[in-house]
Amino acid sequence: MRTIEELNRYCLQYGFFYPTAEIYKTAPSGFWEYGPLGTLLKQKFLQMAMKELVRKDEMILIDGSQILPRDVFLASGHLNFFTDPLCSCNNCGSIFRADKLIEEQAGIPVPERTPPQEIIRLLQNVKCPSCNGELGNLRLFNMMFKTTVGVNGDEVYLRPETAQNIYISFPRLYVYARRKLPLPVAQIGKSFRNEISPRQSLLRLREFTQLEVEVFYNPKTVNDIEKYKKVKDKRIPLYINNQRIMLSCEEAVEQGYISNWLQAYYLTLIYEFYIKLNIPPEKIRFRELSDDEKAFYARRAWDLEVEMSMGWIELVACNDRGDYDLTAHMKVSGEEMYVPDNTSRLVPHVFELSMGVDRSILSLLDLNLIKENERTVLRLHPALAPITVAVFPLIKNDMLVRMAKDIYELLRLDFDAFYDDSGSIGRRYRRQDIIGTPYCITIDFDTLKNQTVTIRDRDTMEQNRVETSQIKKYLIERLGIYQF
Ligand code: GAP
Image (tube, rainbow, N blue to C red; front, side):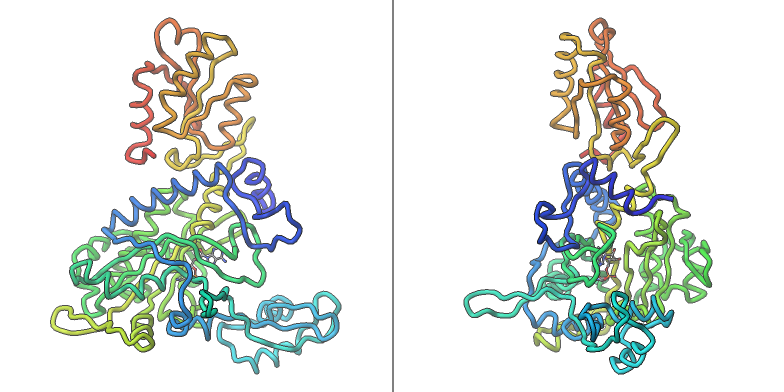
């Protein structure tokens, strides 16, 4: 089994990502940057999400500000409830997350929103992991980054989820979408959380990318909408009583594991997206969160989890937020959020898909990096591979090099292409295999005679002879609609 450290070493070595400001000893943890290959992978991941989620479901897309005024988070509840309990050692002063320490050391679960008095009582069961001293001084630590704006120093916050931009724009978006419900709105952007213990590279960051979909709906019509009913017979993996079970959406709704057709439809949409990315279906499951685990705004919540080398990891939070957010913003801002739908007026409810983009990318790297007999290969979906096509002259012969460079020139504006003439051809193939390049073109002496090249497939290692005039067509056919 691969460890996260081994995966990180690979990602650092090949330039997928690395710690921010790593040349400075003062750099805080929890910030990572995408390098050349990681940036291409992330871009292609988002392009695929645009097709398979946003365009597929006819969502509208916005791009909001990352800094928002205090009132937004007063209304949303993040000012009061987006906190973790901290304690410190009376002897050495070290600071810890109290709930995690109690769970790890004493084996006592500490649910979300446990009252501080109870945490103080439970702290008597644990000691400081550094010096064995007594623990105390419990305080609630808000995970939002606070800053100020303008000369008056008005209090503002970096958003801890992208969702809030969508809620506060609802009146405009509703008009834009011709006053129709259900209304799915997507946003891709950065979120910021002052995590107490950021770790495991892209798994727990302080600055990360989310793709969030907020679906505004009328709870009275969730089961009447035609497109939702189309998923009736589709099967999705639910984690029930410690078992992963495939249930049709109809069974899941009838048996109450999912509340309605709208939820079934969106859970299916996100499940099928991860399958499109080539994540094996048996490594995906939906786990419903208990009341102790749910966020303060959620009525019902499922995590889409993927089984990575380090266990099942949450990639997407799927939350039924009811009318919590719009009602809260209506109260604090005074802006009307009631809309007419059918015969009634209502504050729309929200079902949310909240995807961690960085975690998803880490899962793709982990699940696709395969050690075979004599090679290591990153078997990414061809459309996700950072480099789509590499071009090599068979040997460093002037005519072959010239021809190979011409072909590279022909391709590089339409595809992420890479030219390489150093080392043996076998080593050049291996170097592309390990970073996931799906196609390698080799120019040999036959190319000079009959204008054909070989195109090697990363996964089968088979080589096809293709006319130079047909190379683009060959690649486009294989990348299908996903040609970036
Ligand atoms: N709007 C709801 C929301 O933000 P969440 O469960 O807090 O829900 C959603 O976050 C997703 O964002 C998670 O499933 C995870 O993939 C990602 N995520 C959350 N915190 C993260 C962090 N500190 N680092 C990286 N990804 C994170």
